[in-house]
Length: 101
Image (cartoon, rainbow, N blue to C red; front, top):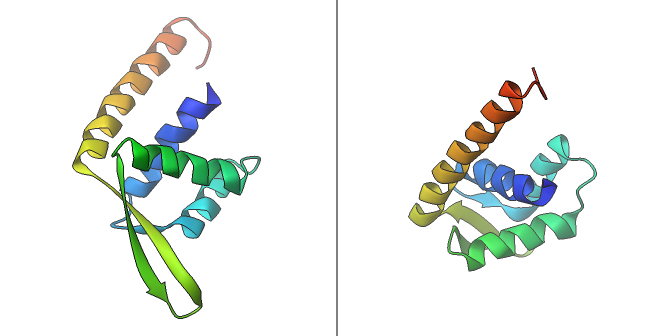
Protein backbone atom coordinates (compact mmCIF):
# COMPACT_ATOMS: atom_id res chain seq x y z
CA UNK A 1 0.00 0.00 0.00
CA UNK A 2 2.83 2.38 0.86
CA UNK A 3 4.34 1.98 -2.62
CA UNK A 4 1.22 3.31 -4.32
CA UNK A 5 0.92 6.15 -1.83
CA UNK A 6 4.58 7.05 -2.35
CA UNK A 7 4.08 7.21 -6.11
CA UNK A 8 1.12 9.55 -5.61
CA UNK A 9 2.99 11.71 -3.07
CA UNK A 10 6.06 12.03 -5.29
CA UNK A 11 3.97 12.91 -8.34
CA UNK A 12 2.13 15.50 -6.25
CA UNK A 13 5.39 16.99 -4.93
CA UNK A 14 6.81 17.27 -8.45
CA UNK A 15 3.57 19.00 -9.52
CA UNK A 16 4.16 21.74 -6.94
CA UNK A 17 7.27 22.84 -8.86
CA UNK A 18 7.79 24.00 -12.44
CA UNK A 19 10.77 21.65 -12.52
CA UNK A 20 12.58 20.02 -9.64
CA UNK A 21 16.06 18.56 -9.32
CA UNK A 22 15.94 14.89 -8.34
CA UNK A 23 18.13 15.27 -5.26
CA UNK A 24 16.10 18.23 -3.97
CA UNK A 25 12.95 16.19 -4.41
CA UNK A 26 14.52 13.27 -2.57
CA UNK A 27 15.27 15.53 0.42
CA UNK A 28 11.69 16.84 0.34
CA UNK A 29 10.32 13.29 0.36
CA UNK A 30 12.62 12.44 3.29
CA UNK A 31 10.96 15.20 5.33
CA UNK A 32 7.70 13.23 5.16
CA UNK A 33 9.01 9.66 4.77
CA UNK A 34 12.40 9.50 6.54
CA UNK A 35 12.54 5.71 6.17
CA UNK A 36 12.39 5.89 2.37
CA UNK A 37 15.79 5.65 0.75
CA UNK A 38 17.26 7.49 -2.21
CA UNK A 39 17.11 4.39 -4.41
CA UNK A 40 13.35 4.09 -3.82
CA UNK A 41 12.70 7.72 -4.77
CA UNK A 42 14.77 7.44 -7.94
CA UNK A 43 13.07 4.15 -8.87
CA UNK A 44 9.67 5.85 -8.56
CA UNK A 45 10.87 8.79 -10.65
CA UNK A 46 12.06 6.38 -13.35
CA UNK A 47 8.76 4.50 -13.27
CA UNK A 48 6.73 7.73 -13.50
CA UNK A 49 8.92 8.89 -16.39
CA UNK A 50 8.54 5.54 -18.17
CA UNK A 51 4.76 5.90 -17.83
CA UNK A 52 5.01 9.37 -19.43
CA UNK A 53 3.74 11.05 -16.25
CA UNK A 54 7.01 12.95 -15.84
CA UNK A 55 9.34 14.60 -18.30
CA UNK A 56 13.07 14.78 -17.69
CA UNK A 57 15.43 17.53 -18.74
CA UNK A 58 19.17 17.49 -18.24
CA UNK A 59 20.91 20.73 -17.38
CA UNK A 60 24.50 21.73 -16.82
CA UNK A 61 25.58 22.36 -13.24
CA UNK A 62 28.34 24.59 -11.95
CA UNK A 63 28.76 22.28 -8.95
CA UNK A 64 29.57 19.10 -10.88
CA UNK A 65 27.97 16.71 -13.34
CA UNK A 66 24.82 17.45 -15.31
CA UNK A 67 21.57 17.28 -13.33
CA UNK A 68 18.20 15.73 -14.10
CA UNK A 69 15.15 17.90 -13.55
CA UNK A 70 11.64 16.50 -13.45
CA UNK A 71 8.29 18.05 -14.42
CA UNK A 72 4.77 16.64 -14.58
CA UNK A 73 3.47 16.10 -18.11
CA UNK A 74 -0.13 16.82 -19.15
CA UNK A 75 -0.78 13.05 -18.97
CA UNK A 76 0.74 13.09 -15.49
CA UNK A 77 -1.58 15.89 -14.37
CA UNK A 78 -4.64 13.92 -15.52
CA UNK A 79 -3.33 10.80 -13.77
CA UNK A 80 -2.57 12.79 -10.62
CA UNK A 81 -6.11 14.19 -10.48
CA UNK A 82 -7.58 10.71 -11.01
CA UNK A 83 -5.40 9.29 -8.26
CA UNK A 84 -6.27 12.12 -5.85
CA UNK A 85 -9.98 11.48 -6.50
CA UNK A 86 -9.50 7.78 -5.77
CA UNK A 87 -7.46 8.58 -2.66
CA UNK A 88 -10.17 10.89 -1.33
CA UNK A 89 -12.77 8.19 -2.01
CA UNK A 90 -10.74 5.68 0.00
CA UNK A 91 -10.25 8.16 2.85
CA UNK A 92 -14.02 8.71 2.91
CA UNK A 93 -14.63 4.96 3.11
CA UNK A 94 -12.14 4.47 5.93
CA UNK A 95 -13.74 7.36 7.84
CA UNK A 96 -17.23 5.92 7.29
CA UNK A 97 -15.99 2.58 8.61
CA UNK A 98 -14.60 4.30 11.72
CA UNK A 99 -11.02 3.35 10.92
CA UNK A 100 -9.84 6.96 11.08
CA UNK A 101 -11.39 10.09 12.51
